[in-house]
Image (cartoon, rainbow, N blue to C red; front, top):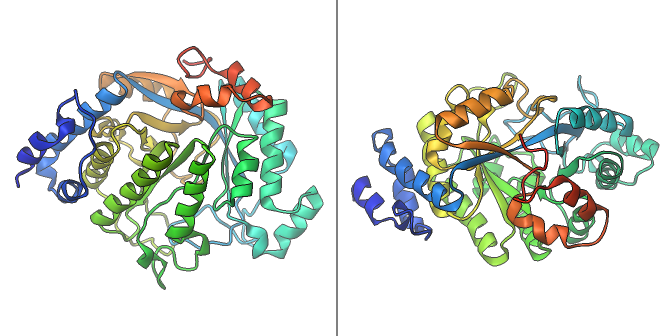
Length: 392
C-alpha cells in the first residue's frame, strides 16, 4: 500500500476525527522512506491541531540531580557515577534550596528531580551519606526534598526516581503533582550482554510497566516515553508506544509521552553506535501522534538541534522542561535553547509558545480539589487555563 493511500485511509488525516491508527498501519508507516515523510507529517500535524490547536507548551524548570550514584550501568549514560568516580555527588538540602530559589527568580515553576535508582542497594558509601543526612533510603531523602521545595519555594516538584512500589508512588504523590519514568523500550533483548541495558537491573521492561501501571491505579499524572536508537527496531518503537497506550486506555493517567533520541557521547560503551537520523526521529514522533492522538507528545529540542523546529511538523505539542538556569545533566553537551529563540522558532511554524506547570492542564482540576499543601501550592501557581500563572 502506498503511503498516500495509507494517509488517506487514516482517520487522523481528517482533523475532524481522533481515532488512533492500528498496529499494522503503524508498522507500515514507521518503515516508510524519507521521501514519504511530507504526507505522514501532514497527517500527524492535523492530529495535533485537533487535540490542542494553535499552541505549544513547555515547562520552565530547574534541574536537580539529587544524586548521580546509580546501580544501573546503561550503555548510553554519562549521568551515572560510582562513588569513586570524578564528579560523583549527592546534593545537600542547602544545595537543593539554593538552586530552587535561584530558579524562582527566573520564573521557573518546576523542580525536576533526577537521580540514580536506589544506589544504596549497591554502594555502602551511599548508605553512609544517607545516614549522615538522616534518611533510611534515597527515596526517603527524595520525599523530604520534594516537601522542602513545597514548603520553602513556589516551585512544584516532579521526581524521576526509577522503579517504585505502590507505597512509594502514594508517598511521592503526596508531595508532587506528577512524576515520571521512561519506559524506553519493551525489547527485552537489550538486557543481553553487551546490549544497551546490560547490567541495568532496573531497566527490565516488565518492572517499568508495573510502576507505570501502579501510578495509573492511583490516578497519578505520569510522564513516560521511549528512547530511540539504543538497539531497538522500528517495530519495537511501535510496540513500546502501544504498551503505553494500553495503560493509558485503562487508567487515563499518561500526561505526556516523550520521544527521546540517543545521542553519542565519548567514553560510553555505545560511543560508536549510530544516532537516529532526522527522518527516523520525525517518523517516530508522527507515528506516536497517530497512535496517541489525545495524549501530549514531547521531544527535547536540545537533542535535535539545529533542526528542532521541524519536530513541530511531526505532531509534538510540547517541548518538555527548559531551564534558564541549570544544564541538562543527562546530556550536558547539548544546551537548552534560549527561551527567546525557542519562542521565535515555535512562532515561525505558526504556533504560540505557552508556559505550563510540571502537571498538564487537564490534570490540574483533579489535583486542586484535594486538600493539603500540594493543592494550595498548585492553586497559587496555575492560571484560569490550567497553565502557569507566570506564563510568558
